[in-house]
Image (cartoon, rainbow, N blue to C red; front, side, top):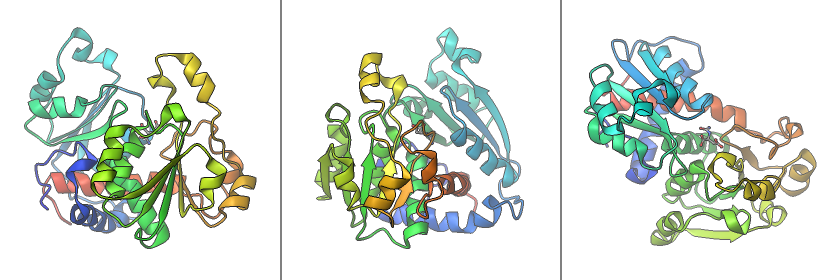
Length: 309
Ligand code: NCD
């Protein structure tokens, strides 16, 4: 696979070989993401960071990745401060910003937004989350974390919990995992199940999965327990959110009883679905994911800009 000049818009664009190539490149970036060394691989390159939705980790980890590899960053934060609020299309935004930057990273509340930007832009566009649709770079860092924590993915059971309807990270993650010999268990309230189009990808590949509302039962099978936040901002009816906000809450006692050996993951931010007393459980990996996010984003930026250390 050659990612040079490619857009990264969806987890669907990758096969297993691609995923493995990205993880391998990430391995080469560890020395830089661990803050041991500054790099100069991306010196002379400029990244535009276009975040039209709240973000702490994703934006700062992309910007950290770029800067620690010697590159530079320009950013728009908040749609209200950009011409999108005057009615400019994402297509025109792409046509504009390609004059400034060598690569663009976008987060936007609308499904398909990264694709619209990429249609206009003549430089690589990376999707950092489009509505409730996808979050492919998060899924890559999740896979990287699982591989580091477990040694390998084949043969493992991954339990995904929470808002599987609106949670874009689990949409991209289930797609990437479908290339491995894994079993997936989806735990959600019946109103917040994994959407049909995401399940179709799994069915096409004969991936083994189950759906349930029962967390305690599913936990017993977990090699990885992947928790998610109920996505309040995506609900049109806040009463529906109130109904589900406490659907699944993990505490230390439950982990020790049901899956003491499992790796516990979360894309963050967490609200209360993982209680703080879980942080010291040996398998808690959600803050390691944050570090791995910088590593994966270094790898992706280097690859789309055609650089290899
Ligand atoms: C996620 C997102 O934005 O989809 N956050 C992240 O990028 N790590 C998850 C979430 O907001 O719940």
